[in-house]
Every structure is written in C-alpha cells, then in structure tokens.
Length: 116
Image (cartoon, rainbow, N blue to C red; front, side, top):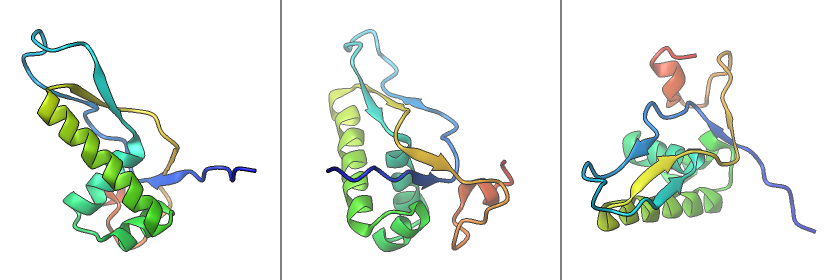
C-alpha cells in the first residue's frame, strides 16, 4: 500500500506565476508547469541560501524529498530557458503557513515582509 503524500509547508504563493519569452508568437502554446513546492525549494535554496537540510526542515519533508523537488524545479527552469517555453507556477501538494505561525529559523518570506 502506498503511503499518503504529506503536504509541504510553503510560506507564500509567488507574486508572479507566469514566466517566459516575450516573443510568444514564435513559440508553441505548450507551457511547463512548476508546482508551488518546487518554487518554494528554489526560493529557499537559491534566494535564501539555505542548504538541503535546512530547506527540508522549513518545508516539513525529508532531505531526500527536498533534493528531488529541487532537481525537478531546476530541470523545468532550464527547459523553459533553453526551449523558450512559458513556465507557470501552479498546483502541487502544499499548505501555506499560518499567519500566527513562525516558520523555523526566520526565513519565512511571509513574515519577513509583513504579509499575511
């Protein structure tokens, strides 16, 4: 029997959720979907500078899970850049942190910028 998937903790949704080439009339209408938890892994590791273990703790998953999520996100970003495809950030299996909750070590995007 397959174990049910745990929701990943995410501090906030991205302000912009569509990225891609400006000259979209030349490309196909096919787009790449990056999940919200993939976006959060990129934010924590590449923007905040956390390592895999710290990022995994922030998202409430195992280190091996964050490694897999991060690799999938990087591959999608590369595909969008190289193939000139639009990338959308949507969906996934996540839970937003609650406004009264303080997320671990102060790297919560929502609380640091005063968002709710």
